[in-house]
Amino acid sequence: MPPQDRQPAFPADAQTAKAFMDQGQPAKAAQLYRRIADEQSEFQDQLRLFTIESLIQSGDSDTAKNYADAINPNNLTLLQRNQLNLYYAQIDLSFGNAEQASARLNLVKPLQLSRSDQIKFHQSSAFAYSLTGELKKSAASRVELSHLLPPAQQPANHAAILETLSLLPLATLEQTSSESSNALSGWMALAQLLKTNQHNRALLDTALDQWRQNYPHHPADSAFLHDYLAQSAHAFKQPGKIAVFLPETGPIGRAGKAIREGIMAAYYQDRNETKPDLRFYDSGQSALPVLYHQAIAEGAEMVIGPLSKTEIESLTASSNLSVPVLALNHVPEINKANLYQFGLSPIDDAEQIASLAWFEGRQNALLLIPDTEQGLRIGEYIRDFWNKADANLLETQTYQANQTDFSEPIKKLLNLDESNQRYQKIRQFLPSAVFVPRIRRDADVIFLNAYETAARSINPQLHFFHAQHLPVYATPHIYSGLPNPQLDMDLNTITFCDIPWLFDNVYQGELSINALRSTWQQFPSVYLRLMAMGIDAYNLVPHLGKLSTVQYHGATGNLLLTRDGRIKRNLVCAKFNQGVPKVIGFVQSANDDYQSIAVPNDDSY
Image (cartoon, rainbow, N blue to C red; front, side):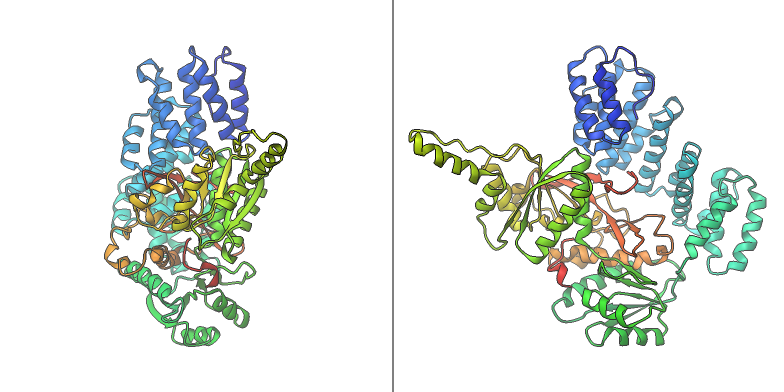
């Protein structure tokens, strides 16, 4: 929020803009602040700071940076300079520039900021340190953040502290926790004993009693620990042996092999001394219920897979799941105990672009989708999310995916066919009338579902029909997964949301796309996302017990378990510039609290 100490001489519109911010409509606030900042001179720098903040919250980091660059820091007060550096850091983080953000944050004196800006400062610091791998500093920033948050938000932050520290080696936890008795040392000691005694509740209770004596009045009080341990242990036991059900042959055999490569890469990278044993089963060779009971008889305590929807339906229809199953797809109608559904669901793709468009102030949309079963289904998802946001879907047009001329559906979408019909009627009375096509002006966004080949023709044709004023938001199908500036120049200005693994410096795990280049090069690029899903499928297992409250930052997105057992992906968004996707950042889903895929024949699995 803008600071409370606004001067009374500010334009009245500034109060209207502030009201938009208070109502959670930063895009509308940004439009108003931009206008009055451009008109005002006496308070222009302060109004620009308000503009920058609202643009950041609305997701428009590019414009926010332009406004920040227009400010001369020498003309600012000390408080304003602190705010400007904080906003620059947030902009840098949205672009994935963690080191540059850290440098900016080092210039900020947080105690001279308002309480709300202090919260943003510590949140940004925690995120920046996390991105650069400085986990202890990230946790320390969250410790400072706890003092500023309202009580209702503190438990989630406390859980994030423990999740961050749990990634540190035991030796680091032991050394730091013995150095002093401050709050961070208490968190380190707590993370150490939870990690050491996680499989023995009796030893854990004894260790917790000793910890409470060593750290009296620590923020991790009994109520928090009770809830945290209950969530951690709920319906999930860390497995010693994992069975993996994947197809080895048939129509999706190659997809199974790509996922297997990701799983094995994560397995070999796992340095935990107690990592589970893996055993692979060909899901195409036996009925799934038979395979499930065979795996259990052979010692499996967890199953990853199967991949196809029909196999998931077969397994869940005829079996009580006595050991947990991490299915690698999503069947919406199924919600069963011990079943976790994790897939590259187009539901997430649709929700993310609809949410991004809504947060950027779009209200009136056009939808262009292929006339295929998958395309129509994705269109329904986009329509559902858009309607839930109380926005308007003005028109939907379908196209034939195997064509290269998309002029007819585009003309219908833009109402150019109606413009031509009006001209033909006028010409009957005025033969000399000149035809000037007029496209519709009631829309402010186009949602597009198209693979990259079709999109490379659709986008230029939209420009040909003078629709370049309409921003295009697309599903990840438009991106092959690998930069190709020469071919993708025709995708310029299109915004899309995709998995973090495909973008440099966004996914911070050791198994980056560059680290596994020699592995994925044996597959067509369309299988890249499946390899990332394999990485997450293995790495998710230790986090399943907490995934309903603590996000896992994975290769396929920021992951969270929903109430119906589906693992939802929060994606990273990018915009094509000079044929290369330029990262915007993660987007808040319209139905989430604010926090800061395309596979072949996805629906047929």
